[in-house]
Amino acid sequence: MFVTTNTRDREPVFYDQVYAREAVESLYRVQCFHPFFLYAFVIMPDHCHFLLYVTEHASISRLMYAYKRSVSFEIGKPLWQPRFYVKIVQDNIEAVIRYIHMNPVKKDLCEKPSDYPWSSASGRWDTSDLPS
Image (cartoon, one colour):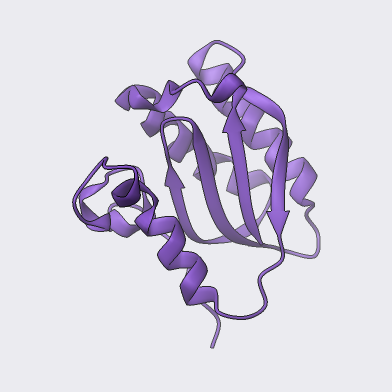
């Protein structure tokens, strides 16, 4: 699933590095309680993209609720628009990963995807291998 969620009024909350780090770390905390495979992600200043696979015992709605709640709680204020967007990806998964990783480059936040610290392209965060 390719998931996008926006901050309320597209406020650039995650320009703050402390908040951006919390947004990433919350992904991994939520993963402990709502199992999913995380293949790629990026935390942009005003939105987030995730490519993930939700296991049969989990629900994308519960996962996103838990994620948004966790980030808001840790930061200490409501952050999110109430909805999120999901697209089922069956083909060309590599193109979705490229889109996610190129997002900060397109927004002039960095020169190359690996330079952006709040993305799986940076190599700083653990992500799952795509199934063969």
